[in-house]
Figure: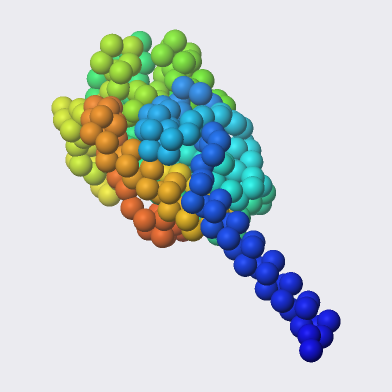
Amino acid sequence: MTTPADCARLLACALLVACSAQVQAQGTAWPTRPIRMIVPLAAGGPSDTIARIVAAKMTEALGQNVIVENRPGASGIIGTEVTARAPADGYTIELVSNTISINPAVFRKLPYDFEKDLTAVSLLAATPYVLTVHPSLPVKSVKELVALAKARPGQLNHASGGVGTGPHLAMEWFGQLTGIKFEQIVYKGGGPALIDFIAGQTQIYMANMVTMMPHVRSGKARALAISKRERSPAAPELPTLNELGLKDFDEGGQHGIIAPAGVPKEILSKLHGAAVAAMRNSEVAQRLAAEGSVAVAGTPEDYRALVLRETAKWRKVVQAAGIQPQ
């Protein structure tokens, strides 16, 4: 004889099986509508440039439009909070720079926790920074820039896409190693910073090679050196800061994709596969390489570990720079 308790258990089992089947079916059918790719910085910057390149190829791989949505502000925190609070259904992803690793070092409290609220999808690209000056500044080498800055103490400024961004901290490090303090002119993202720099409103810009090299080639900016340990194939004539005497100077941008925590494994696997396919596309690799970026790809676990290692490193850099957490 079936008891009420038996009936309840049978009903619970049936519901569990039905729910499991529904989740599996969703994972199999996904995606059935467009996916938004949050970019937590302003349009026109390096993150935006890479996002649009990658989104186009992910659209081809997934069979649904991947739409770039810029949500700038607070050094990328606003956009990342949007991602952290989005449903974990795979329809919201985010293209992040290395600010995802830096922000925990420069902000006392964030509205999200990378380890709890977000999940890594894939590393995408690594890009050197290039130290540039406006052509109106009478210097053609790093040595001349250092000499001019020492001759005009406190008079030279540099553009920054935000306090605590990778280029900003790299510039801080450059100043420490050369004994120079530059005035920082802060903008809401790399795009606005680039516009004013090209217009001559600022004098120096440690910038991502992806967006800066076209302006260097057109003569609107003068490149002095790159930030990575090895010279870039995109501009082999440019020396590295390391070889110019700034030992162990090896910095650059990293871009990757993250998503809300809890995205089903089947969907996460499809997102990762589409991202890797984009990076392995010869057209994408050649386009990024032409501007100085190197297309890379790895597992979600590899990217997560990288973010955590970088966070630990930047905490030490920020402390040494005397930057007070905001």
